[in-house]
Length: 510
Image (tube, rainbow, N blue to C red; front, side, top):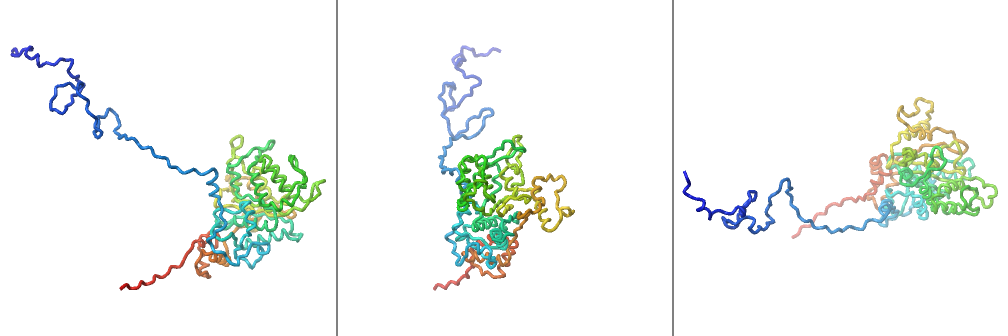
């Protein structure tokens, strides 16, 4: 059936195709409910910041805001070496502490007086610079809680003072004797302070004191090293560490070295003059680190000389005894942080600095010809594990107890333990030759109850303790400190404790 409408009648209602929107364009509804205007001719709608726009395919829905730039308010960074200086800063006096009345000083007379056992003796003020020069003080030893630095005169310190008196005395049987000791003990037993007491006694007796305050610094890879040409197996020298050793020796023993003149001929030192003192000789290695090791060898030859070389007899004086202390011996028994040419670890005994001081422990040949003392201490606060050292110390204990090295009870390294033979070689028994004493092992323990009471009374006199110090109270602190361990006693005595006051009743208010 034909439609009653024709196309000409509907032609006014038709819209040209050119102005029709495309099929892909979506119509937008304006403010009116209906509008016949095409979308591309309409005004663009304003964007609403609070509206969520249509997201595209795989587009993240994150809120992007401009961040305000934070103003940098950084403090000035510390200068080079400032943190290390603060970490190693040593304070030897506290003006807030009370001054102990009647406190005696350490002297050649008091260091051998048995009547002063258990009392604290003050270190002479004139000696503090010398002890600082050899780095005898440590930052965590509690020097900053007292009015002045002092040290307790325990049984081991009295025995040490008597050894100094015998070696420096006029007895021909004891004069010029060499004492070799390795000092061990639990943590806080006072091994480092024992070395400090030895250095103080050496200064009082006008000995030459040479110290290695921290053996770890020589094997930690923090100082320069270089191989020695022609050495087989390769040996290595540490010029900066040797120069630092010469500096400590010159600053601490300036008075003694100034009184001694050069009496030997030394090859390789062109600037050496016969009229130079030993202080001038040691200072040659301070300005030029490359000459530090030859200068140290020359200084050591001068200190151990018993007679002058031909043609250099003018002004020769006998050399005083020498004290050598090393703290942290365990670090010289493990591998170092240095590398050889084949990138293998350098053995600590291949460092000529370390090798020189370890060779002094052997008594099969003369070392300190003018007498002296060798004190090497282990460390428990920073102690590497060394199985070879433990076996060597056990062998020394067995020999001191009378066990023969051929006995089946004599300690020996276990099979497949890979014990270092070079370390075990140091602790092999050697016969004493002349006045060269054998290597001994000294184990420091705790203080006795009498020594503990004298030590804690010093805390009370300094204003740190407000307790009634009697036998019962001292026995309790002695037990709490693990049998008088001096490091634990310091922790118990440095805390100020005041007795609690009874509360007074408040009066009634009318």
